[in-house]
Image (tube, rainbow, N blue to C red; front, side, top):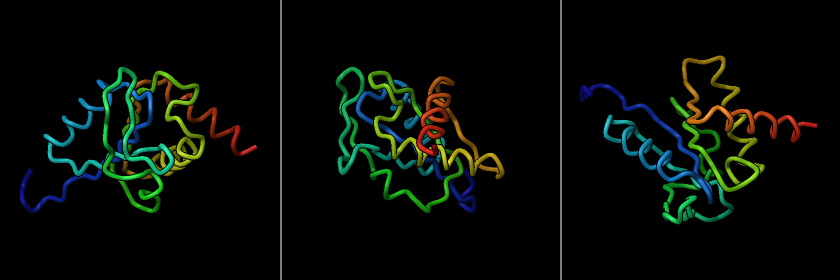
Length: 129
């Protein structure tokens, strides 16, 4: 990346039960490419999450600390051990709002597994009722 270029801001939400390979490899590749990656825990007041196979991931921030920030990319890794893909209903709603704002702007939403997005949209619809 040219020194005059601004690095892209990326949000990667993680939760207890996140598939560690999907999260860690995604975070690593993006950081190696020069992206400014924020790993955000969706667990209430807890930066430390335990991934699907016991790997501990320490997030840079809580998801609540990311509200109001603009990200060029929101990357949602697969979540395997909970009925909701990110572990908490309010975080799902937050990510859904981010994904909706991305539909009308040049920013992007990356869902590593399509079923995760379907679950987010389904949960968000239930929250809106």
